[in-house]
Length: 446
Image 1 (spheres, rainbow, N blue to C red):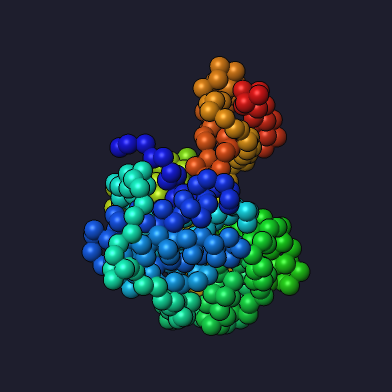
Image 2 (spheres, rainbow, N blue to C red):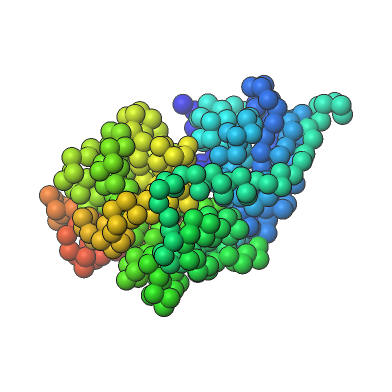
């Protein structure tokens, strides 16, 4: 498989105003994608976005590009990434396009695609789009230009889909939930889903202004929701990220329940109800505590590369349906075609109702090993991971942790970061060791 020039692990992403997140490039991307997708059939795509101020500009550029390629466009407005995946299937569109940089700050943005089946585009289609990008942009004849229309009931359709994934024999009546939407794409959807199922909902992060997405709130910044759960004496908290495909939770004590623990709770309940198929896919970053807890229940566990697309690939290869990243991407193919924060939260709430236990009680069967992650920013073409001092540092730490823990170094697929992870039984020890390696990476970057 040829190396991609523009598409990363999660589409095309970067700083707004800098190549490739410029109006000119995004218009050409729309045209190139339109040319490739139009050859496949329906000549219709859907475009949705999160709440970033740059979404208006990029939406218009994409619309122009697709129209020039002769592709009709359905505009969804602000819509969670998994909602766009769902609507792409229901509208029988050729593709769904998401304008979002997920958990990144407002000044970043990106473009990612879903195929007709509501899953991310296959590699060969992305490569075909990249090949088309290298050609000159053209325009079909006027009579063949694509038309655009706004789909006004998109949010309502997705709300009803989410509610349909919560068993009808249960109700959230009597449960108090804090919902943090990160001032992102779920702001007008998630609170309504849980409220309409009977919960008492306390909203935070539901007042987007174009620049406050993911700013001190949501699944990547859990202090606000932890404090709110304790302050309001809520039963639990649900935190989503800017585009709604990540879930982090908080139990009634204010303890943060991450993606590993959420998928453990879901797997435990699926095993009890007999609905689990095969095992669970995690990633190289998944806590060893998840692996050990699943083994105690006799549930197989496999690790993919980091990135929800790789979790999905391994689920398909193994014929399994449940997978997650500890960062909060939870995929349950019994319910959805992609990672969905709202659906994952409903799966956890199903376990709470079915077992008549609190989130605090359900998570007790899994004990996480201390895991320390240090991010080191780098620039330029140098590869700090291949530097002699970095490799020596990693070797020394592996020697110290033999049989007790592990080390993982990797480049982020979405940001110019080297992620240094050390895991082991003693938190202070792994903290010190992680910073030792991070210091070596910093020197290699100088």
